[in-house]
Amino acid sequence: MVQILEKLIDVGKPIKIVITTDLKEIKKALEDILFVPNEVVKSYVISELLFYLEKKFLDEDYKIQVCIGYIGTEVEGFVIAQIDPYYTSYSRKCGTFGWLHANSLEVCKELIKRCEKFVKVNNVRKIRGNINFPKNLGGIGIQFMGFNEQMLYGVSYNDPNSRILEYLDSLGYQKESEYTCVYVTQKTWDKGKKIDKNIEFRYVTMKELYDYVDDIRNLASNSFHEILPDASGRNRVFEFFKVFERIPKSFYKIKEDFNPKTYSDVPQFVETWETCDLENTEPFAPMAFNKTTGELVGILLGLPDLFEAWTGNPITRCNVDTAMVKKGYFGKGIFSSLNNIGQLTANLHGVDYYEGTAIWSNNSRAIDTIFPHCEPLRKHYMTQKRI
Image 1 (cartoon, rainbow, N blue to C red):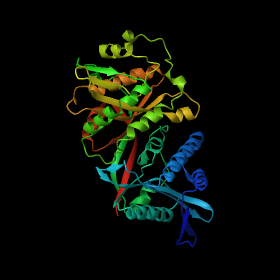
Image 2 (cartoon, rainbow, N blue to C red):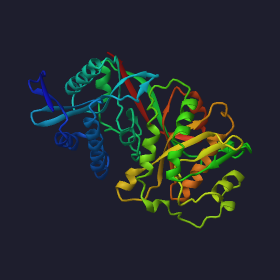
Image 3 (cartoon, helix red, strand yellow):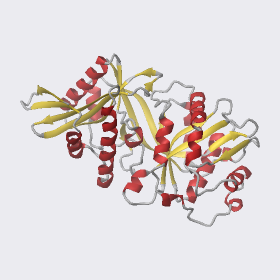
Image 4 (cartoon, one colour):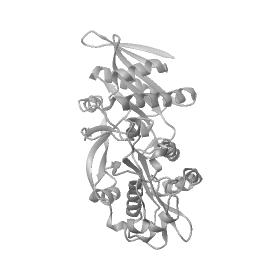
């Protein structure tokens, strides 16, 4: 399905906006206009995005619209508008735009007008962006700091010369939320060395992780008791698992002779390593349990940097995407302990870079806990508008 609308701009050249589900046309447009710092990664990103779009187009109940802006035969803009049933902003339904690229204000204006119309037709009155679904592939927000950093899987990136923020501002969009990504400079956090004896840590196999889906979801509901500006919903846990399943098998081979007792002075860490098969467990998902009740009280969910794997290199980098600690267990060093055992364990597999991502500037608890151990690297704005 293709719908074409035209708009004349001041210079007399017609802007043609095409609303399409034609994957070949979308692929060509992305090849022309999508900014990805690494050309090899770009081909993978386009392929992954097309696969995602194909699935959404086949779902008649899913609300999504792809718009391409042309001047003549040249691609001048691209955007995806959608209403994802699992995405909320401040606990309310919200429309989104993502993967926005525009070579001029005029093109940006016409693309955004189609997004706003799409959202309003579906009875939603707020729109935010960039939300680059799927989140693991495109991340969230529009980058405004840290363009010299190596791109990281799950983190939004854009052309440092892009004027998208400026264009959106002129179109009435507010820079509503600021997110920071931080490099974890401190490998061991002191608060994570002193652990309540009733807390134990576990690593489990990929198959066993699926058995914990409900526990992880319940922990998320309990842990994220704040009203968040951007929340991905209950299906987010499966997105992590699908990424874990794509890690090359060679990654799991421990790259050094390993003696747990000489690797850490924390008894709970040693106990964890001695009671699991480190080459058959998922190192990006350390979990903390109450020994007495068996209850899951904390988990870190990291994303391996698949961008490295796509360029034929070993995975050495981790996006520390999500941290959850059960209410009532805050201040007990569980988050710091998960960080410590997580870094030590992943390091056995060759991971030596950790970046905490999408930390909301208004989340004082996260800022106070994480920032003293880290160095800010990149920043993103989330924009929004009521329509």
